[in-house]
Image (cartoon, rainbow, N blue to C red; front, side, top):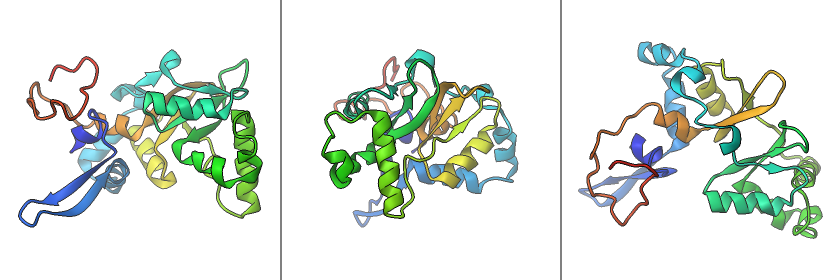
Length: 220
C-alpha cells in the first residue's frame, strides 16, 4: 500500500472485500500522514521522527529540478505545467529572485470559472494577479482562501514537525526555504511516505506490466 501511494504515484487506493466484492474503504496519501501524526509519542515514531529532514533525504526535489512559475507569467502556464508534469501544485516565484509569493494548486482552476474578475481575463491574467484576485474573491465571500498561505519549513526541522504541520494544515506540499526566504525545494506527502518503505527487487514481478508506467530507472 505504501509503495503504491509513493513510488507508483497513486493518490488513493480502494480496499476491497474479495468475498463480498465490495469496496470497504479508501486509503489516501493524506490518511497515511494523519495515521503517522496519530503515532506521535510511540517509541518507533519518536525514534524516526526526531531525525532532521536532511537526514532522511528530504527534500527530494531541489534547485533547478523544482517546477515553478514566475509571477509575471500567465496563470495558464501554471496549470499547463501541472498537467504536463503530472503534479498537484507549483510555487509562484518573484521576478529577479528566488522567493515564493504564493502557491497555485490544481484545485485553484475552479476560480477561472467562478470568479468574475478572473474568468473575464483568464487568458492573460498573470500568476501574481491570479493570487491577488482569488484572495480578494474569497475575502468578499468570507471564505478561507486556499492560496492565501505559503506554507514553508526549514531543512533543519524534523520529520515529525513536518508530518504534524501537513496534517494540521490539511495540505499536500510544503516548500523548503532558507533563512532569507529563498525557496530551495518542495516536500510532498508522497515524498514522506516513500521514506517509510523500500521495494525489494522484483517485489511486484510483472503485475503492473501494461497497467502502470514504471518510474524512471526502475529495476522492477
